[in-house]
Length: 108
Image (tube, rainbow, N blue to C red; front, top):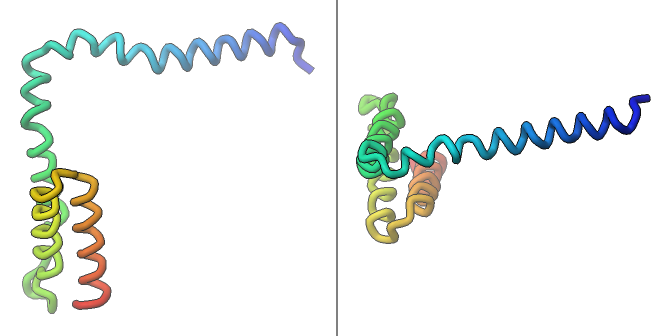
C-alpha cells in the first residue's frame, strides 16, 4: 500500500494540474478582450452561426414529401416570432422545437 507522502504528492500534483488547466485560458485570453477583431466577431458571428444552423437543419427538407416542408417552415417562423417577441434565445429555440415535434407527431 502506498505511503502517505506518495498519496499527498499525487493529490497535490492533480490539484495543481486542475487549477492550471482552468486558470491558463483566462490568463491567455486577457489581451484579446480589448481586440477590435474579437469585438467585431462578437457582434457579427452569432447571427452567422444561427444562419448556418438554420440552413443545416433545413437541408434535408423535401417539398416533394407529403408534408411539403410545412412543419419546418412553421417551426422556424415560430422560433423567429418568439425571439422577436421575448428576446430570449433559449425560450425561442425550445418553443420552435416543441412546435416542430408536435406538428410532426400529431398533425402531419
